Length: 182
Image 1 (cartoon, rainbow, N blue to C red):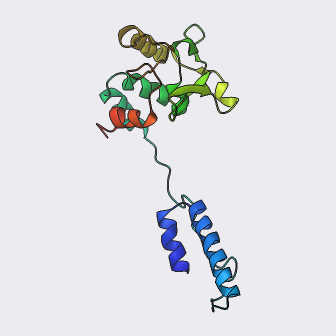
Image 2 (tube, rainbow, N blue to C red; image 1 turned 90 degrees about the vertical axis):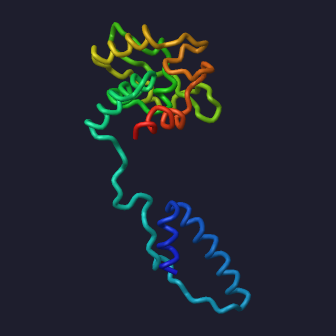
Image 3 (cartoon, rainbow, N blue to C red; image 1 turned 90 degrees about the horizontal axis):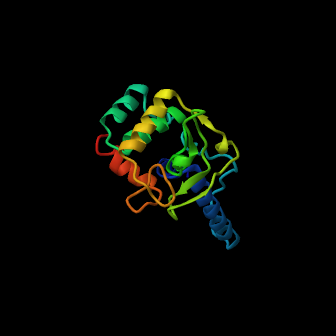
């Protein structure tokens, strides 16, 4: 049984393994009630691996970030630069509007986030997400240049709209902005 659990742990999440074990336990319990001989497996005798046991989270190192930004084309260059310096979540970044940028105070004030499923803007998940994010003068210059040279007006005033003027999908940003190079 431990070998089965170990193999499952490599193929699915801890939650999925626990769910499957619960179902198996119910089936085996019913079989035992019906008189079928079932080996006893003491509760807690199985070891289930954690979701990311010992694995390091995937991230880009500073040199890789600089290379990605340098080799990207717009709007991804500005998008990746902004993500790198602000730490905004993908939904927050893709939900930014031009009105969210305060060039005088050098702040970005996220008000909405992009919803991948509906391709609309929705409320931010947490109150902390509403906290203004400071930007440097250099980042403000990057944003001003993007707005002047590349940005296209759209009904919602999105900073990074798709061709239809709606929020971009995260998967498409990865597919078209990041994957061609990495």
